[in-house]
Length: 86
Image (cartoon, rainbow, N blue to C red; front, side, top):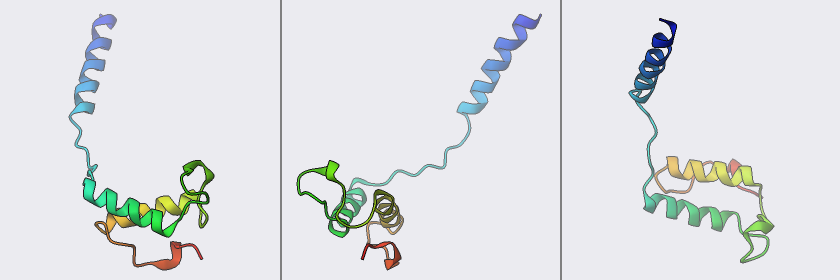
């Protein structure tokens, strides 16, 4: 009796998990390209052509936050200049 309940419970849980709605929104290629260009302009590389060298201004966390704000603004530069490096 116990062996029949476990597979049924696992199958039921899998079906319920798969049926859950997902709120993730995909960004368009145009927005991603615009934001990537804005990030590259705002945070220039330390050594041109070497992405492993890092950024001359700001940190990786600041770059990611700037990119996320740009995506949230629909491909426009964020209005808040507090995240921009000095």
